[in-house]
Each structure stands twice: as C-alpha cells, then as structure tokens.
Length: 170
Image 1 (cartoon, rainbow, N blue to C red):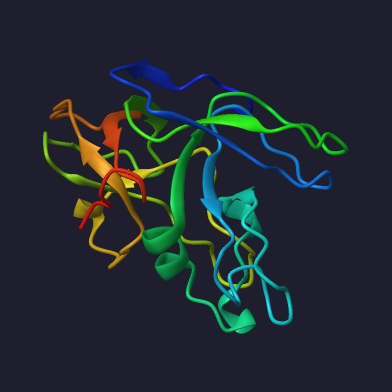
Image 2 (image 1 turned 180 degrees about the vertical axis):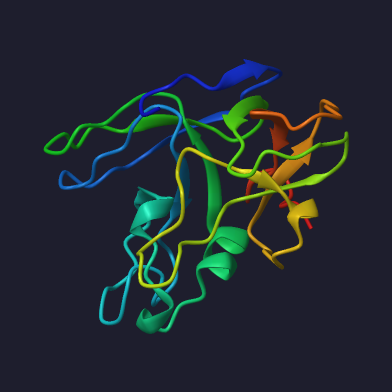
C-alpha cells in the first residue's frame, strides 16, 4: 500500500514543504504540519516541518490526535522522502484522491471522510486508509468530502481533500 499515487483529478494546489532527515514519507501519505506544542509529544518543540499522521503524539502526550488532524492537515504527499533525505517534497493541498476504505460500507456524495484514529496504545493515525463518518465512531478528524456514491460495501473512497490551505472539512 505504501508509495501509491492516489491522485485522481482536479487542481492539485501544490506546495513545497520541509522534511526532517530522520522522517520517512511515502507518496500518498496524509501529512500534517508540526506547528503546535504537544502534537509530536511532550517536550518536543514545533518546527514547521511536515510529518505523516503516524508521527502524531499519542493522547498520553497531552494531544488529541483528532484535533491535530482537524487543525493541521496539510495534504497528500505527491512524492516519497526516504529517511536521511532533507530535500523539500511536493504536497497536494487540493484535488480528488482515492484511498482504501478501512471499513467497507456504502458511501454517498457529500459524506465526510475521516482519518482513522489509532487503536488503544498505538501511536499516530493511519496514513494510507480512510473511512466515512457514517460509521458512527465519533471521529472529528475530517479530511474532506466523498465525491462518488457506491451503495454496496466499497473498497475505496474517492474524495476531495480539504486542508488548512483550502478550508478544512467540518
């Protein structure tokens, strides 16, 4: 699943962002910008670099993962950045993307698409799967809106991303 180009169509609205040399990012990863105390753990100062959702601190780090995603979602990595590389990467802040659905269920146009929160004790959130808010688990880590209806349990969700650059989904 890693390093998948998940872009389908629409204007990408790309930006270039800095990545730490000790951070691994795969094409298609959902990314956040670390600009708030506590988002990557207690005592880690914000640095305005981008990180995959898996690097968000666990709730024991005084951070609510859903709040971090809701306020710091930057977009989708359009290229990979292996550990040890410090060059900027291209991130799409707009556009329509296709991601595997965590829980197979029917989806409809306009449904909120969410990032799965980690299971108990697991750090970070998923960087390569999504689901619709219709599952009723109370997630507020919204990433965008579904743009294609599928009445049977679908494996993938096509959705328009909404980021800090183009108006977060609410």
